[in-house]
Image (cartoon, rainbow, N blue to C red; front, side):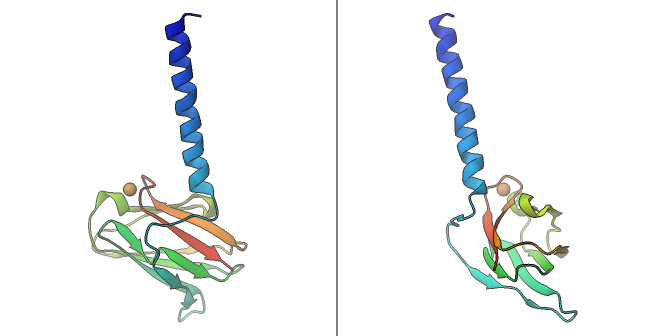
Amino acid sequence: MTRRRAVALGAAAAAVLGIFAAVQALRTPSVQVASAAQGRAAPGPDGIQTVELVGAAGEYRPNVIHARAGQPLRLRVTLHDAHACETRLLAPDLGVDLPLRPGGSTEVVLPPAPAGSYLFTCEMKMVKGVLVYE
Ligand SMILES: [Cu+2]
C-alpha cells in the first residue's frame, strides 16, 4: 500500500467515525437542545393528549415536550415561515416523518410509546427537539 493510499484510507475511516459519532449523538436520549422551551401535552377534546408546536424563525417551539408514556400523542404543528429547514419533521424512533404545510397546521397522532426521550428534528437534523414520555 502506498503512503498516499494509506493516508486516504485513514481520512475515510476518520470521516466514517465522525458520521457514526454524529449519528450516535443524535440518538442519545439525553439530547440537549440549544434553547429549551418546555411544553406539556394536555388532553384534547377527544381525550387524546395533544401538544401544539410552532415552527418559526428556524426552530420548533416548544422543543422539550413532556407527554404521558403509553398513550397516543397528537402533534399539531403550525409552520409560520417557509424556512426550508423546518418543513419536514422527523422523529425516527417514533416512526414520524411529517411534511409540514407552510402557513398552515398539520396534525399527526403518534401511537403510544414507552417512557423515554425521543429526538425530533427537521429533515436536515439542524433544528432539534425532544419528546419526553414519562
Ligand atoms: Cu433543517
